[in-house]
Image (cartoon, rainbow, N blue to C red; front, side, top):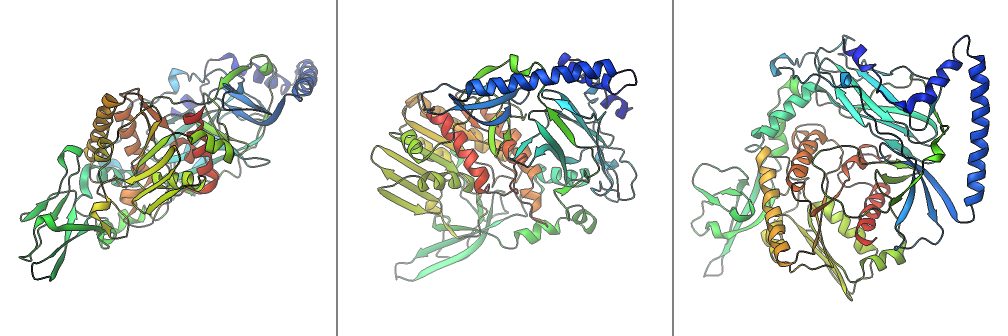
Length: 585
């Protein structure tokens, strides 16, 4: 039943060109074929004339799509930050799936998921629904995944975590995720795409986690890791006789049995507890450093039995798509008659849900509704002149800070791993790490870690002050409310700042995909865990439209580079160009 439902087509006139193509493939289609060839020749001549007429003013760079819209970028030779329009949009109609395509809302009971029959990437099947010899720009295409077990038997339930994209590698990299991805909860999945560039397009599909692993991860988000993944805290003091006393104890976000030290920062939702030092000269006021408990990863792994650990041995594995027919895409008949200009990207609110926000075209990231300007060093310096940029959060925020610092000639620099700043005439850049928990392997002085809400409370703000929040990578534990409460505390601090300086700009950076470790650590570092946190982040900040958004998640889902907690340079450049376009244009 699901297969026949999945083959239903959206009711749209955007496939009228394809109807003509299907006519050519019939026995009596010779007249249609002649007409099609004639129209194609006229289209080619029109494209050639259009390019020639505009060559003196525009430099063609790439073909893009506005998510559900097809675009082509033309950058003016002398483009300046004051130019308000950057792209030409082909205005493809949005995908409106037939209502029969939407799955019935049902979930497989946990008890029916079998660890002895996990989804297997080697036997699962990817296929194009109703493949055609060639497609036009703006056509829609449906890709089906049929999940199967190791013996080739079809799965009877859903919940697998797949990633799927369309891509072209040469001459430049093009890639896009699906507009819709349906899980029919019976082992069948359907992805709907809009075709957005010409040439040969291929399908890439990965099994990130089988549903059986997702069920275990879901258990983790309910709090099972909070007492297992712990930290060390050093308590240290110097007695009146000059002798130094110190002791390492276990610390974490969950309370311990008494006696313990409550080191929580309640007004910033920073729950933090340590076992009380046993030495008589040490008190709870002597907490000085924090570091990760090196045994935590082993303890996490010990929460999995042998069968559970087996389903995490392979992650992000490629499904076989080598037998799929190539997707050949050409310019459609009337596309050139529906061009509209799109503006450069500006600050926009945080969306409440996760949905496609852009795609790669000719190696560059193109958001769905606006254009990104790729800055040279001079434009970069002009952009930040007179501004004060404050980045708070984890090491993904620090990576952004370091990118900015590398492109500035700072007069004064402070460079500590958890506290950095770069100052020059009329401008400054600052980075501050968030408060515990911190998963780094280093021993960190407590005075170098301040809760983000506390740091924002110290800011004066102003129209040239920009705050960037990148807070996600260390918050995979302990439960669903912990991260939300921390974000709410930060949101409250920003609200107080806006009362002092309502013109202060605040940008929330999304999470990104990352490399997966094999073993217990994946329980708190999987992309699936990050995805759940991303839903929480958007849910918190989308409630106030004054918060702006930098969507990195969608970009890293389809990037050409390998996944990394700190995106590789080719992706980082796209992230920063996107950010600077929003700030400066």
